[in-house]
Amino acid sequence: MRLEPMRRRHVRACAEIETVLFAGDSPWPPAAFHSELDLGGHYLVAVEGSVRDGDEHVLGYAGLAIMGKRGDYETSLHTIGVRPEHQGTGVGKALLRAVLAKADELAAQVFLEVRVDNDSAIGLYGEHGFERLGVRKGYYQPSGADAYTMRRDAITGQRQEDGR
Image (cartoon, rainbow, N blue to C red; front, side, top):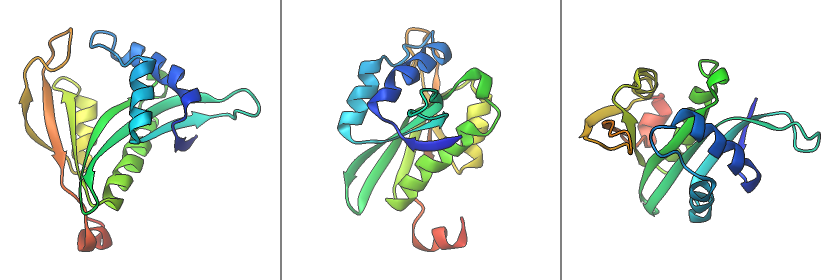
């Protein structure tokens, strides 16, 4: 498996994964991924195989929106997903760490929303320094599921050097 920047050729596969993972909560269509790429966020895919050999396979994806200006950035983990058959194999953790490394490079806080019943994702985020800020009632549509808003503080200077 390798991580690489999301390209337009990956969008269809990412949208298919969304459809499987988030069927009851308005999965992102290809147009949403194209729009995010146009806005210049930090979007990655985990892939196996190669384009040259015609067997490239997208295992998962993650996207970090970057807002603000130099010295005052804020980021938001807009989406992350892993094919069900590859969940629990470290793909999601690798994607999360890679997008968090970008946030660290920018010395930016990271925000996200996660379904309150997604215990595995909540645990993963907690392991990576995220704290719950509150609940957004009815955040996911059309299911009406609630979401926790979570934040990871910016990692800067001494904290990066100390590994905290």
